[in-house]
Amino acid sequence: MTSPREQIESTLAAIAPLSQTAMRQARERQAQLTKPAGALGALEEVSIQLAGISGSCPPPAPERPAVAVFAGDHGVLVQGVSPWPQEVTVGMVENFRAGGAAVNVLARACGAVVRVIDVGVASEVAGDDVVLVRNVRRGTADLSQGPAMSRAEAERALAAGISVANELADAGHDVLLTGDMGIGNTTPSACLLAALTGTPAEVVTGRGVGIDDDTLALKTRIVADAVARLAPDAEPIDVLSEVGGLEHAGLAGFILGAAARRLPVILDGVIAGSAALVAQALSPEAIHYCMAGHRSVEPGHRTALERLGLRPLVDLDLRLGEGSGAALAFPLVRSAALILDEMATFDSAGVANKDD
Ligand SMILES: Cc1cc2ncn([C@H]3O[C@H](COP(=O)(O)O)[C@@H](O)[C@H]3O)c2cc1C
Ligand SMILES: O=C(O)c1cccnc1
Image 1: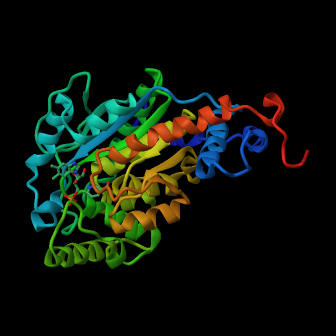
Image 2: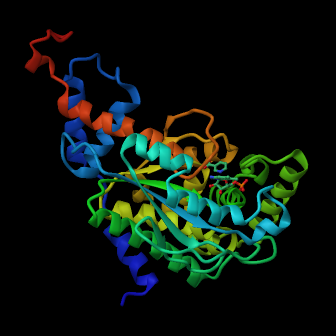
Image 3: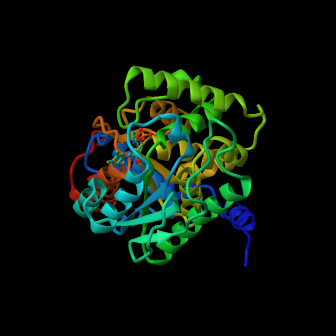
């Protein structure tokens, strides 16, 4: 039996750089397709990234997407950082199971399956084909009072995320999408963003599902105070355990696990972005396997995307989470691969190129 620590170490060791050869071939091929060079904008960049990820040009078009919705609860909720009660988390887990949440609809629309991972829900959840029970603890401790979780718990949640990525890869899924559910989880997200990018709490703390000015001021103070407890040289897993959430840890592991399996990852909003910063701190290379599905309204997401060096594919004022923005972006990612594979070149179509 490998320990969570060993699983994390072996996963980090397995993350390889993208194939520079395949990316060069993809760039050259893009220049030969029957369109002005660069005219497909960010889709061209995505196609080149997919080539680098798969190590082939053209890359196989991803066709079996899976959204992994990591669910957890947050002790800091008792401070009043979200107007919604904790029971909504488990209620939404049941809604995901029944297929009635926004992400279920958007996943069906793009042919993705939804898997929910109970990595830290406060109440007991039944497991089945849709809901995987990997509960590390029944919600974090209140991060405004002390560490949200122990380092060992953070490692177990990271390892759970790695295992889920491996299971989905083994089941034949060729692109992994991130999702989250956890009332209060924009507070630990803001903490991770502030801590890992050195950005003031006022810049990265937002209204989450919708809070008034007084609550935003309280939330911002909680974020600033929690981050101030961290040692300046705190390791990423210590930052995660002190001020993070169990779903953030699961998501960070999921991203690392996908990168180790050379699978593309479509990130959702601010919770995914903050988890990706943890993954980046553990393995900068892992982010080269990631695409930003969208840009969330939550202000810290902009900070996260800048630090990750990712350009959002969709910008529709979403502020939901669950994997909604990732599911919306999947057809764009698939289209990018199909363009590189199926478009005629000037030569094959007999169209005169501008240099002819
Ligand atoms: C009914 C409902 C469904 C959701 N689906 C995602 N979230 C989103 O909102 C929560 C984070 O916002 P905050 O930190 O402000 O609580 C998370 O559960 C996130 O997934 C939801 C929130 C609610 C209320
Ligand atoms: O960006 C997100 O994913 C988000 C924003 C607000 C609330 N829940 C999630």
